[in-house]
Amino acid sequence: MQAPRITTAIPKQRYQLGEYQAVVLGDIESPDAVRYQYILALVRAGESRPGFYVSCEKNPRSLAAEGSHRLRVISAAFNEEIGSSNDWSDVDAFAAQALALAIQVLGLGELKPERLT
Image (tube, rainbow, N blue to C red; front, side, top):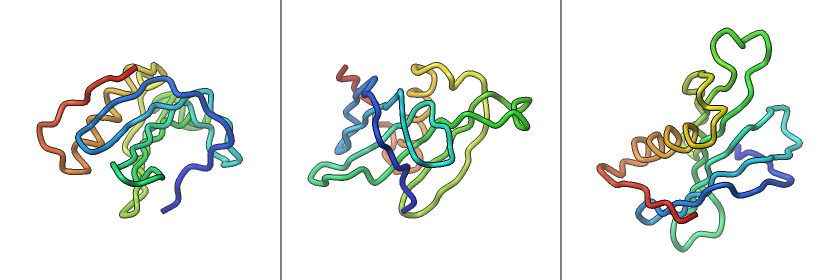
């Protein structure tokens, strides 16, 4: 899996999502070429490292007409850009969309995330 490389980040929000702990990271410094606004990282109970990510990446100026930020889902199975929107620059809008994507992709059905912080 091509996980985001994170040098430093600040946890902004935490959630319990069934057997997963989810954290929204902001103020991200990374050696990656991508400029991350936020990253949602999910860790399954009993595991020490995230196995699923949704990243909010700043779009380059050439793609700004599509939206200021794009979402990408990263897991062992795939690395796929989902779309672009100006809305995802807001941490709450990003978290809601990223959690909905996680529930859908991981097949968690009608599970509702419980906000911890």
